[in-house]
Length: 204
Image 1 (tube, rainbow, N blue to C red):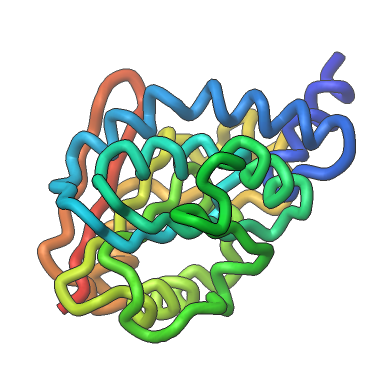
Image 2 (cartoon, rainbow, N blue to C red):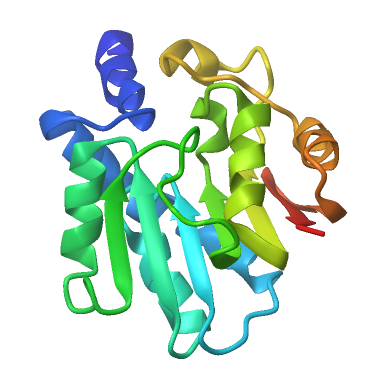
């Protein structure tokens, strides 16, 4: 059983194949409470340009569209399965107001100062060279734009770190420190029981 669970949860980092498709369905459902709470902390306005990094199965893209009338929402993910699922979930708005591509947080394929808002739901654990990735986020944000990280708090010795390969655990306090070090201002840390955290920062 442990081996089967490990095979399934190893798909968190880069969903692939049948197990990956199951994981994406699980993510779309399981991340909803965290995402809806985290997004409730954001002051949305009409016609925003938004990027979701590590867009997974695309449910967050739909939620973002609903919060900003006339928004254009972009999603990027390292996994081909994720890109395909996100496109399917958002088929009605694909290439109209939703744009999904494959890529990494290390090298975002977008122009400088393109986005009003960047979100990351349960994905920063898997970003290599987090400090560099945060610089990339800052590059593509407009001045005054906001970055919002949403995570479920995981302890360093959690069973998840054994189950999920390539996962680096950060406390919410560490993530806030990373945002400060990357030059974000007005950084804030919010917590909600039992284990949700949202960390936000603004590009100067």
